[in-house]
Image: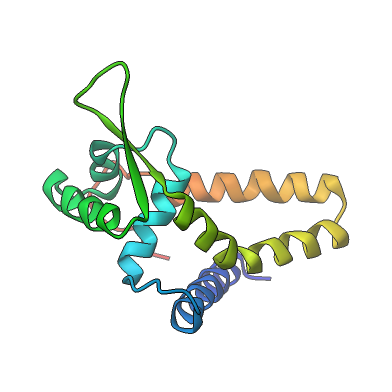
Length: 150
């Protein structure tokens, strides 16, 4: 079993699933894949703000502000002013977007249920620890600007 090949296949399957769902969706959701990725990040990032998104994505705050404005205008995200600092707005998915995500996450729920019925809790715990470690290493910024070769 080749770990890199397995991870590449997983990412491929996930991307294909999301793109198919976008194309087959009965909803009036008319957004780009880039917008869907922003929604994914906003849904997973605690205390998400424009600044936090810009820092995570290594893009300008103005670019993120434009995308956030677009998503808010479509009713997909909600901007909530911070009670501690009125200059800061926290970003969350709107109730409409949450409903859309239930549709998109159906495949994930099926996969999780299959894993839970196939593997022991100890095996799943090991898998979760390994996946968390891989995820952390995957996005870890290297000290040099050179890309690591396989």
